Length: 300
Image (cartoon, rainbow, N blue to C red; front, side):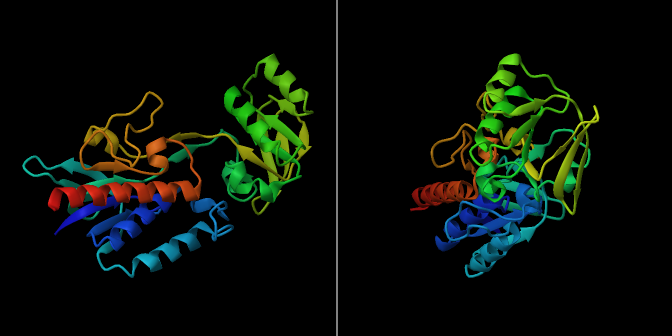
């Protein structure tokens, strides 16, 4: 069987693309290896009618809705290679366990994070330490918070953003120096910048209580936000020859068509940066509209 479209990635972008294409009666296969970035998140916010939903619950609802469309197939497997077929306008999707053929591909695998190098950070991430104030700032409002960032630009931006939710704020750079102007700008808002390396985070069951620095300083904090770096965990763009912008974003049109015919991108994968749940889902819809429009034009 040759699928009309293979969707690599089953986050909000990939699942919403599958919904649109399923309703358009296209034969779709969706690959999900369970490595979505929000799998450690307790709640998702900012999506009307789904505010506060657990990401896993969101996914289960999506699976139930997709099950109504017989032309959509969900596969739990990892795609390891995507190969253009030389003699046909098709692609081979090679997974850990199988091989599939498709005419078109939507890349929607999202991005992964590189966190600041702080001992035991993962124990708190997604519970009391977060990456997105728009997602979790309301729940942390007026609390004693910390911004964890190792680069000056990101530290300053996140501090300004988080200040909207809580003015009880410190910035910790984990041993990285910051320029005097940044110290001064934040000091004007009574925000302390602590450049000493972090020795340990103290708390219980993922709930932060104190931050201990190498100098011996211990500061009470109940939560915080980190500034991470992001990367794509697969080489599909390179394998397929898709063009990228200088900032790493995929070169594409407004509906997700990349520089390579029949290859589309959606969600965080296309932007190389985090995205709100509702925006990623909208990206998936756009890519699906493009896929269906192109198939319709080619076959009519």
